Structures are given as structure tokens and as C-alpha cells.
Length: 140
Image 1 (cartoon, one colour):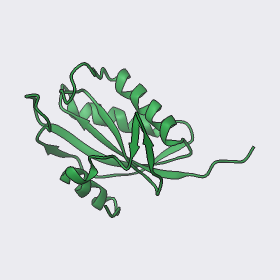
Image 2 (cartoon, helix red, strand yellow):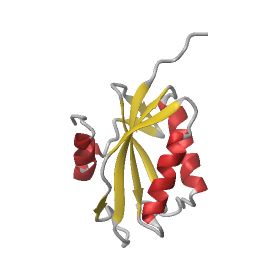
Image 3 (cartoon, helix red, strand yellow):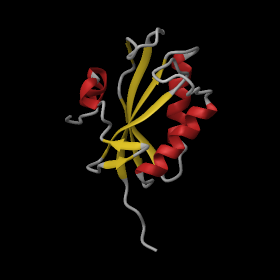
């Protein structure tokens, strides 16, 4: 069995309910504890207006770089697990959330599956993601 090489996944963290800072902090810790993964960088945290038709409070957002041997689909499964542990409710599309974790980029890989698209299809519509990636030294 050959050993998988490490890739860098860029993950957007967002929260607009409750202890927003706490949710982001716990998410960074949970990402650091994923198997065969290591958090290597994090952007500044910034507050942004919500996107979409649902009236809700402002978000705290941050981008992190995660060195990992997990595949994009394995990573997505882990991210959704973290969101569930933090009380994420998916009943309202574009609704408020305790924690939102999105794979924005995954090294040079592209994924086009029903439940996962990488690069994230909204990357070029989210100025804050572009700023956060630029802070991490990534060109969009």
C-alpha cells in the first residue's frame, strides 16, 4: 500500500449564531485533530454581512489552510461531522448557522460531484474569501 501525499485544502469557516468566536475556535481545534491533517495557516477573522434572502445577523469568517492526506470527499464528510457536533441546522437554505465549513480550494484539484464542487462555485462571488485566501498567499 502506497502512502498518500499531503495536499493543502483551504477551508472557509463561518458563524453567525451564538458565540461566533467560540465556534470558529472550536472548528480550528477540530480541524487540527483530523486524522493525517495539520492546520498550517489561518487568516484574520472578519465580520461580513449575510448572503441570501433570509434575514439574519452578521457572520464572522476566516480561511484556514489544512495540510491533509484526506481526499476531498473524505474531508467533506469530516467537515459535516464537525458542523453537526457544533449544532449546525440545515433546515433553512442560506439560513443562520452556528458553524459553516466549506472547502473552497484543494491544491490544484478539481471536483465536480453532486455534493462537492472544488474550487467552490461561489469563490469568485465572495470578496471576503478572496481577501482571506490572498492573506494566506493564495492567488484566486
